[in-house]
Length: 185
Image 1 (tube, rainbow, N blue to C red):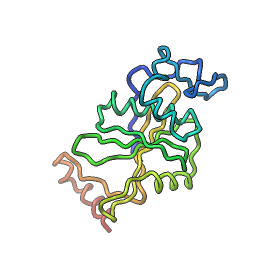
Image 2: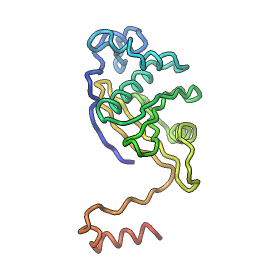
Image 3: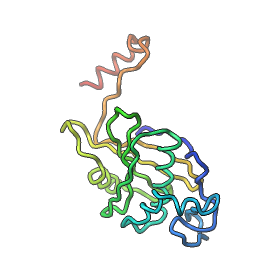
Image 4: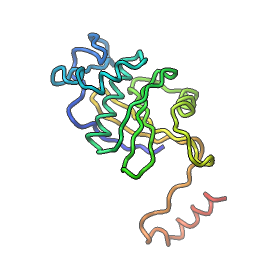
């Protein structure tokens, strides 16, 4: 797993009052969705997400926060939401750069517990089909805190050999060669 933390940009964080579904919040861990007025409830993408067959408003709110973070904060391309009713999740398909292949982001509120079985189910049902059958399934969990902080964890099915270092000085290093030999055995 590769963590990469970063707060979601754009001031879309929760600010008390109502949850993403419009219900009043009061319990600890509830998600709010009215920061800066009612702009989020009228955002076209948020209303599209609300119309999907997903019953958990916290999951919808998390998906929208990740959508904004990828599109506005990180400048990703072709960010599209896809409802997976079977998993009760909204996944995001996006490209980090225009020429890159699509990646699957799975937004998850921080208070949701995920078992190994649930993660495997998410990987099998949310992953995009691979061109190369030897390429392992891959999704990125986007864990969303109530203050709109998003932490990304890339999950793959099986082991993935790391890319060689960019620095040529490290490539000549004896330790690196030893590690590389062990990885390929």
